[in-house]
Length: 58
Image 1 (spheres, rainbow, N blue to C red):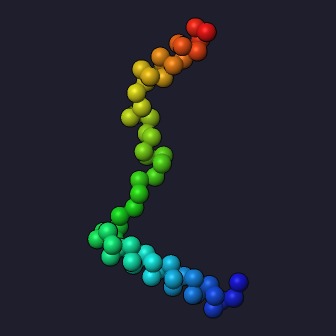
Image 2 (cartoon, one colour):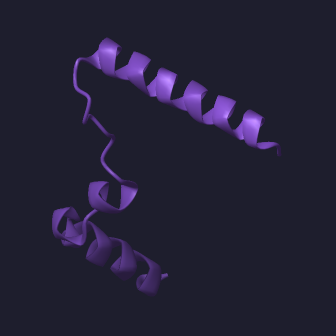
Image 3 (cartoon, helix red, strand yellow):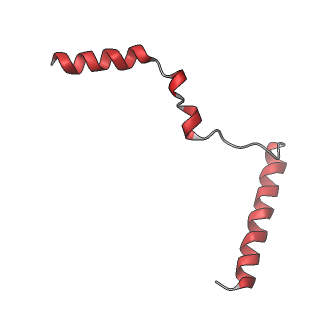
């Protein structure tokens, strides 16, 4: 990849990020990472236990 092409790609990405910031109104808005969406603290443990019991009883 030439240095010119790389600079063009970088400029295009920066431009598109700017467009997103204008659309959503928040320059720091980022989706929550998947790891944090499924945090162990938010898992309903009773469901996991019930499923395990079902499997063991078969």
